[in-house]
Length: 82
Image (cartoon, rainbow, N blue to C red; front, top):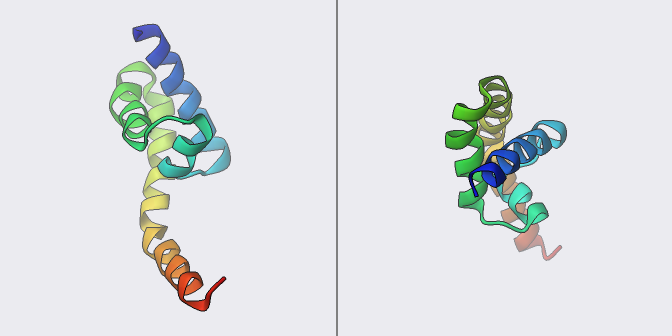
């Protein structure tokens, strides 16, 4: 299991870096939970590959800073009936 989560953490990180995807979108694509994705790319990846960790952290921070905008657009879309 350890080797599997090591590989999975790196694959998830590369996907997030390449696409700029959120944790939720990544979880949906790989059919695993959001908490698993988050734990893999934050805690486990830090011990496995620090360079990759810092690249993913940059994307995650960008997504976090834009989160309120996406939420507002989703609410707008919901009430417009789209």
